[in-house]
Length: 340
Ligand code: NAD
Ligand code: TYD
Image (cartoon, protein in one colour):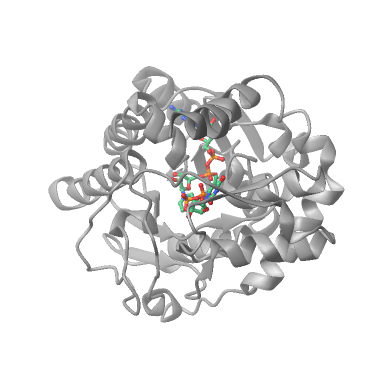
């Protein structure tokens, strides 16, 4: 492993992963291949600018010509696929781009990986592919998949293709299923950065339904460590859950953000629930632990680091919360509430 193509590397987790790799592996060259959708931001890659081991290519993973040209030009031997349309609410409003990028795009990458006899193809997947998990159950990697949103269904589709390429063509693949990440460069349409930035501005925190849904919120750099571990020590053809193994109610997460910022709980506003909202995700992470991994941050530590980052980096998120973002916000929170 030497020349790594990180697709979707200008997004939230992908950019954190790039910084992690550049810092940890002195011998690796990293090429980010990213379409720069609304969620992809060159600012996220600023710390890598000027590094001779880093290059950026603007391109769409659905464009086979652009993908193969990049692989050839940079002698790529490893692909880590983060590129995706990642927001459940947007996938409910409009699923075309979700299916195209998450399924067809993954297929284009797999075909290219096969053609160039890539050493490793790693797929970044999600705990959402398991569907809603009633307590006290925890999802294990061999459990059936029951995705329930266009987003999670598309991610499950991609995973199936990845596994099919392992079985059918012997492509060396691994997959990780991460729980909800939080941390620097998190686009403020997702719950934690949305609530944090709204709270900083004394704006309402829109909680869907009763807020008793549960998520395993993990620190993004712990997730990056886990992906690194699986890339180096994971078994080919295998899938690994990545999370803390501890879940939090959304309403408690919102209260902790407000407490951390010294803001009143009265900013919490209950709004119409998400359609088909998965009540709980919960992972069994023993398979990854057996590889020697353990998360370095619990939820409280991860949330505190995240809130501080948003307080200290208004330059990053303020410009995002304009233009297209406001159109989305209006559709999602104002028109939807009125329609219901
Ligand atoms: P993000 O939305 O912040 O970033 C996605 C990136 O993909 C952006 O840079 C975007 O420009 C790029 N992209 C989108 N379509 C593309 C295309 N057709 N071609 C090339 N690039 C394209 O997402 P994220 O939160 O960083 O998630 C990254 C990956 O991790 C996704 O595959 C997601 O499903 C998975 N994941 C995310 C979480 C989470 O909590 N955020 C949890 C588990 C798994
Ligand atoms: P989100 O960050 O969108 O991640 P995902 O849906 O992929 O888990 O949402 C996290 C949780 O927070 C989820 O249960 C939905 C809920 N949520 C709200 O209550 N209000 C919001 O405004 C958003 C965006 C999410």
